[in-house]
View (cartoon, protein in one colour):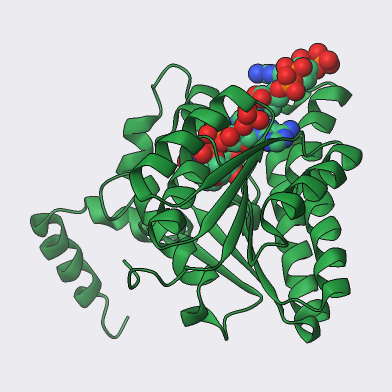
Length: 285
Ligand code: HXC
Ligand code: NAP
């Protein structure tokens, strides 16, 4: 945990902050002194989280209803944000939509729905706030939450994979272009972390969780608190020279899936002895 009070006097805006990882990041920032504003579609869920965190930390969390797919609604949300707190110091693009599906079953609207939330929603929030921050000559830090398959691609979540890759490209591009305005942009790619929102749509029967854990070298899923800590660091002044970075936090899952010989973890000491003998016997041949 960062030093207490290190976000005092700062304002953080978090999309999808009412649930799951967004709630955890809001909770961490609020604990460290930030005034937070959370936004998504379901105002009742947001308000409940806002009240819960405010009561826990003593630092105010505000809730604003906003569908990030609607640029008009995003502009209205930013007007309300400015009225409540002024322009933010921290912006976390965390809202997402996703579900597993064979791609041949996707309608155009299914594609549009996911890519609108993930890529267009992130772009609308970033452009709307970026323009206002630049106009006001105020520096800030943006963080986006993507996934490890934004890099590799993945079957069965193709709209999400395509949109998350776009989010990463957006962040890297703006880190280059808007650094001169005092704006930093970074990305966290989390591996699997049990949240109701994600697991109900990605593993509705629960049959893949064991396999997921099996390929994570640290032997477990991540926790929302772990993302909360990394997010707080990247959005803090301790990371003031970190920009354009894409940081994978997945217990080693990505490299574990990528390395061609990693399956050799299954080889027993007896099998190793036999294999070594076979390899050595080829010397000179
Ligand atoms: C095929 C589906 C579908 C499914 C919806 N659709 N679910 N198609 N398989 N399982 C289609 C619908 O038929 C419709 O197309 C279109 O998608 C829009 O569906 P709606 O239900 O009308 O959309 P909406 O009410 O706007 O809800 C959006 C949503 C929903 C994305 C579908 O799941 C949602 O609200 N999600 C928000 C939270 C979320 O997804 N969290 C998880 C993030 S996890 P038609 O053609 O019929 O009109 C994540 C991490 C991944 O991203 C990494 C983990 C390791
Ligand atoms: P989650 O609880 O379902 O979070 C998604 C959030 O997005 C919800 O709070 C939802 O709130 C909001 N949202 C969805 N559509 C929206 C819209 N149109 N406008 C505004 N807000 C919208 O799932 P999560 O696991 O915490 O996911 C959070 C982030 O982590 C996502 O970016 C996800 O891709 C990423 N991630 C998660 C995992 C994991 O294993 N959990 C792994 C990798 C990456 P409303 O329903 O109120 O709109």
